Length: 294
Image (cartoon, rainbow, N blue to C red; front, top):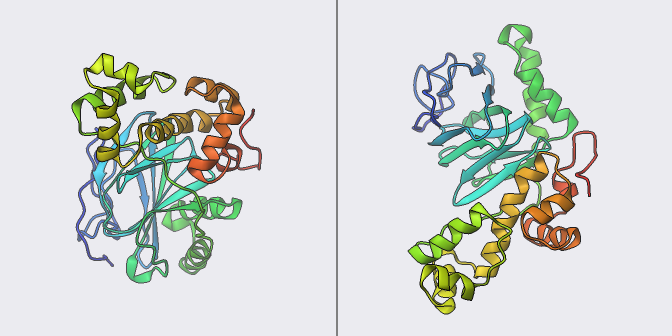
């Protein structure tokens, strides 16, 4: 069975290839485009297909879309997904629901195993029409691993029961995405690029103006008109974005705070809570319940 819709193949520097079984992309006769060492489990009659794709740190699937809903998750490593002008950084405790037809790019901030669940829209009761962060409980983690086994390892009726429980366990998490879009103005963009290279740089707009040849007022207007954020808001978002892969890799809050430009761990935690909606220790809690260290 193939849901409607067209999709571009998954790129990211590696050529995809079609697999067997149903087609999450909505193309007849093939599975989701995948790297040569990826693996897809899509038994006939199942409601959920599961793809497993090892990724190196910094490796990305280029912008693409699917004809099926997708749940992107990494049991090991840290994923990042760019879609709808936003970026999500996903430790193993959370996954991202990507509705069918939404263009996105998926990559890894460190070596990771991407587990992609593809849900046929006509057999899926979930109707979220925009990306949603989903909590990955211990039970959901085990069920995803169970469904990733070969089709001959699980009887069809047992697989359908497991798929039903997976759908019951999809619960959104109330977090805010971190976004720091590049300004279009070339002078403001130079400032943005410099800060991406060193988020801890604390220069004011007046000081940046002497570097890029613009007044502080001109740069301030450019950030607001091009990004929808004041310079201060944009820099905070950038710092949080830079901090997430470091926290996900296990760095302490104190060390990350210093690396991204905060004078104290408490100031960073307060900014993270305001920007994301939860504290770093909650968002990056380990599977066993232990959060990031101070």
